[in-house]
Amino acid sequence: MKKPHIEACYAFPGQGSQFPGMGKNIYKHESAKKIFHTGNEILKADLKLDIIDLMFNGPEEKLKETINCQLAILLNNLAYFSVLNQKIECVLTLGHSIGEYSALVASKALSLEDAIKLVKRRAELMSECIPKEKVEKGKTHYMAAVLDDNPNLINLVNEACEENSLYTGVNKGIVRIATINSSSQIVISGNENAVIRAVKHLKEKKKIKKVVYLKVEGPFHSELMRPAAEGMKKALEDKNITINELKIPYIANSTGDFIYKPNKIKESLVEQICGTVKWKKSLEKAIQEGFKTFVESGPGEKQYKLLNRDYKPLNKGLEVLVTKDYI
Image (tube, rainbow, N blue to C red; front, side):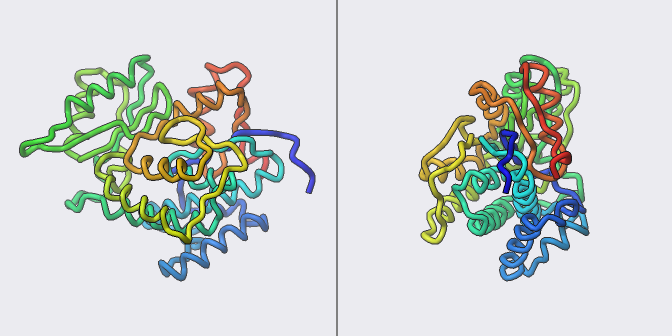
């Protein structure tokens, strides 16, 4: 195989990048097909699930379920990687939330099979933490995206979360920052009542331009996921799961910095379940270290759009490759 002549940082997307039909365009590639079928063999045995059929044909509501969504994204991210990496050499990996598992496979710290098993367990544990109260279909208020070009946005959102988290009384509920994607895009998460209070606060008192509730099953990356983090710690300690020394550098969500040692990788994967995804810090770290070319390895264009909109204008020479041009 001819060695790739382009080098790039691979950004692996997370939950929200799924859609019915995902992966169809790369299934023609043998490397991608092999990854999809490996996933199908493992998951059919455990979940009685045909993940390929679900990814290609839906239905969308079933694909959006946490247990299915996270596995579909993992397989797609790595299928894309298997094709892209034949033309674009991977010199750094970053993964957004569940995308971290794809990044670790790409960096040779995890095998595909172990990643599938860990993501399956992660999704199960997170699903178990979703509050059981009845909610109107498609109307959950566990997470919301805060979108504004105010240079002080992070502080404003932090203040709103602190002021609207109540730890006692009938209106008890917490809300916190779940992800910091850029200076103008922040996601909050928590109990529905607290998230609703914070959204109202941001709109009315902070005059934030746009706050949008996300169509997600639960309050991900909040303290409500703590039992899932504890369960994931046990899963990562399983003697049948191996995390190796990295072959390609990797920047972690939990720190926004490089991590190298297997024990630190395990700690980071546990912490990111209920901790803030420091995506802004991660991308800025990569850029500061001299990495100037990025490619999104996965379905959709969420990271491609984010990098072009919020990072390229501020960083001279930054290049964001169009994924479909290399598929």
